[in-house]
Length: 262
Picture 1: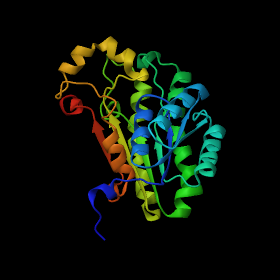
Picture 2: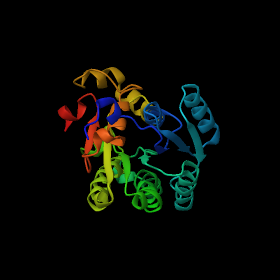
Picture 3: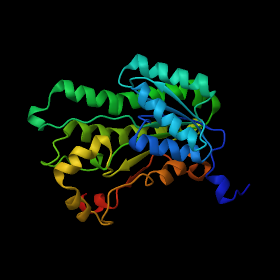
């Protein structure tokens, strides 16, 4: 049956878990899902940040809860999935967003730092996807998983960046997205990725400043950095019925910078 466009994008009553959801891009995506009607469960490591973020969303009329957990720890990540399902009843939408970076030349990059980045940026995405899928999405024959990659995962690691582990992890996230989409499509689980460009987040701020904010904007076709609304549309598209025939895909939300640097 044909639905009107407003109904296609609404998420009323859906349960959504967002990792790294207490600030930055994670909070932006949580707000978008909540504004579309979803009940959101925020996650990060720090309870104080989560409490403040949830209060902010509640003031906007969004049903928001939180769970503190370290997604880089397997036991904690699986606990997060189980508790989120228990408290929400079902996790219809999982946003894997928690991330870390490390700056060092490839020849000097510490293995401990490599493992730290990979454990959070890639391994935790698989663990949470696996746990949520088998406990909620596969039994319910429905689900949406949104993995946050990066434009840094689309190209090589330039000499000015020195973020070999981060870039590699974000490339791998796209591979994970495509593989899970292919395997779990039979359960009506859609798996897609978003590749943000440069947003003035806590994670990216120091890099943007070191590279030069004005220079970066000048090299971007749209002449701007991402703001606090630029991920909202694609997040709701991927999570809603409007995106039900999209799976295994990635989309760069970057002002066009990957067009001129890729």
